[in-house]
Amino acid sequence: ATPTALLVGTGRGAQLGLLIKGPEVLESTRRVDTVVLDKTGTVTTGRMTLISVVASDEPLARRLVGAVESASEHPVAKAIAVGAFPPVTDFRNVEGLGVTGVVEGRTIVAGRPRLLDDHGLTVPPDLRRAFDDASAAGQTAVLAGWDGRARAMFAVADAVKPDSRAAVAELRRLGLTPVLLTGDNRTVAAAVAAEVGIGVGVGAGTDEVIAEVLPADKVDVVKRLQGEGRVVAMVGDGVNDAAALAQADLGLAMGTGTDAAIEASDLTLVRGDLTAAADAIRLSRRTLRVIK
Ligand code: ADP
Ligand code: MG
Image (cartoon, rainbow, N blue to C red; front, top):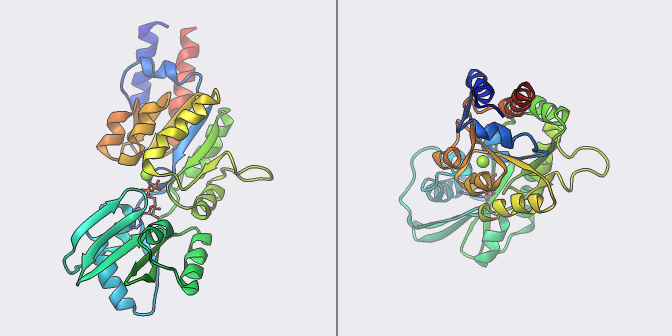
């Protein structure tokens, strides 16, 4: 490869809104056959809003759970904690599962069912049903409880980015297999996947949608795919994506994402849209063709 031709590639990259760490990055995109896409903030906007609350005492649930979530930076928390809340003590963020804290003398647990289970809180059937219904609708459902059982369900959701579906189709046209990777639950993951055209069709869905993955385990998913002989690009935005972005053969960070993700990546998609990921791969192939 001649350095001049590669640099022409990076110049064109800048026009397309791609910040490339070095010309050699383009070479590693050549053999990529699999593109792992983080869900929240990558395929979806990451700006979540509160859709519904189910609780026998809704004002109490909003106050107590809002208070604990006000101490968290997670997109789910930002949707639940809108406004002013009483103080929280003993706040704890349980990575990929939820939060706990003490509000008005009660220990509040909010997050995935597993977190409530870990704290010995039972889930009454009506809340379980509310949780399942919200999940089936593609929303992220959060259970919250105190004093022995779950007492509220908060459903939040963000939207798929306008270009995500077209970008997935373009990645497929380039011969790449898209894989959706998320810490969110299977039902939500499947709903988002269907919306953007991942894992749809008979027999599909198992290898293309990987859900309920804890932040620390995302990197293992990339390693496993590489172990199958795949050459993997990973697109992500979060702190919890950084290790996977570094492990991938090509790491692409959303420019709208966290510094940790950007630093761990080879390439930054400045506008934060998925179309740029397809642009990056097409550009590198074209650049390499010019060189040959
Ligand atoms: P993603 O992979 O989609 O970026 P995370 O790994 O950060 O998601 O979180 C996975 C899941 O853990 C969320 O979908 C949510 O159900 C739960 N969760 C994480 N943080 C919180 C929080 N602050 N409050 C409630 N639930 C949370
Ligand atoms: Mg994310």
